[in-house]
Image 1 (tube, rainbow, N blue to C red):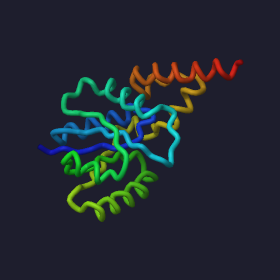
Image 2 (cartoon, rainbow, N blue to C red):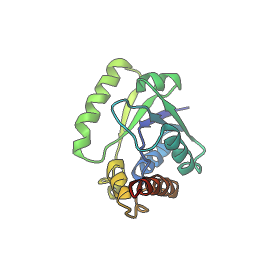
Image 3 (cartoon, helix red, strand yellow):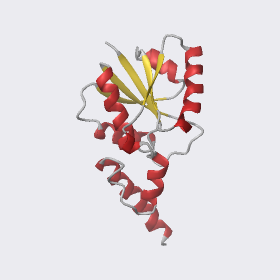
Length: 166
């Protein structure tokens, strides 16, 4: 069985992420979507919320699992017997960072490949930061995120709006 992991912070999951996951499903037997704990980022959603949104958004796919992890991606890949790490590339600007990470991961675990996948061109401009900003300004994000994420945004930002009006 050829299993890969797709790590990320997924704060929140977008249709661009899901497009990459669908592409990975076509190539591999199993995809483990792994929600990373990144100490350099302050996510809007909790780890539990991000895992739940992914599970709900990917519930139609039998060969996809969703978990969280803390530590090195290559260590997690080894733990779950993955043969590779999926990384999405939207634009040339993503490549330099991802290339450096891939080389470091190769140095740490030569037997685990990094596989770069490009999303559909309609998602190349899309990232979680942009979507979070739009949602915080009460903009319609239905073209960018699954319904579960839209609900989570409404809940998160309606609470913040109520607090700011007091």
